[in-house]
Image (cartoon, rainbow, N blue to C red; front, top):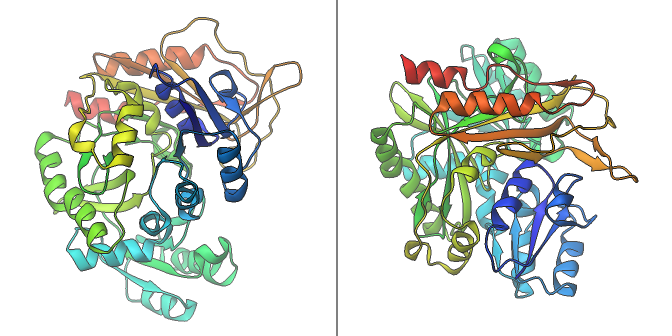
Length: 423
């Protein structure tokens, strides 16, 4: 089987490594991939949003199956375009990917179908939005409606900060058309949980839960990032809470999308807040999370390619999805200055032998084959172990065996989870 994975980050590297475990997979192409992914797949310099070039390549190379991993190509209809050419895909069609592509759509869906989420209002003009802010008290959450590279959410600590965020989105065009409409919602409190789920539009199978660490610096300080590390499972996500989420959030969401004529097939990401009033949805993503994927997939015992094909074929209820009863930790090594400005092009030294996985996110190959930094989040060091404490210790040992100039990482990934487990 000749496979194609769209995307070029650590998430895609984790997916590719897992797909390689299936003996029927003979070749994997990554579009565009990166310098580290090139060790596990054939990288093709086609951008993830170049839908026509992706389709042309898939037809020309007789691709048997495609995995569309990032949000942009999903929202742009990459799966639709590939399926029109008879190429089976993992990922939702554009009319279902809108659950991430438009926060206004997602909030309206939850309101119509009684799915618990934060109270909110939506606006498409600045004056009305600013006037509404005057009726609230801080903190206030301001969200751009569309995709914004994970940077379209502001938790404003004051009225002025909220209005500034609105002005940047709606008047200054900080996120282009994605910020023309906004969602203003109440600030929820409680532990955050990420749950990825396989679904074929009818059956839904949640994966092991995880905990992300968004802030750049220790102690949850500094700027928001795409994620500085993750652990799984999330100790706050108990069996009782999982049952509640299945009954009030997961199952109703899948049923709602099907009722709307938008059946969701692929990986649906639930960003949850465990509030004093019960679990509520913070956000939906229409794909595998990054870096959550880097701790969830290493714990997957079942064959990923088999699961993905069942999702595509609508036979997920016939496949066993099993995870190891262990823990995982991923520590992100980033370029100093991320997520603001940073320098690139430094050689990366990797250990010749190591336990765990190194998922490359932002790196390129020099002409002499040297791996060079080429992004803010450069790579993730992931380890699994019988206990979370062991997984964290192993992940940091692995991270510390990797070096490049201007590298930094948080030193407290998993600390909150360990406190929760040990209290």
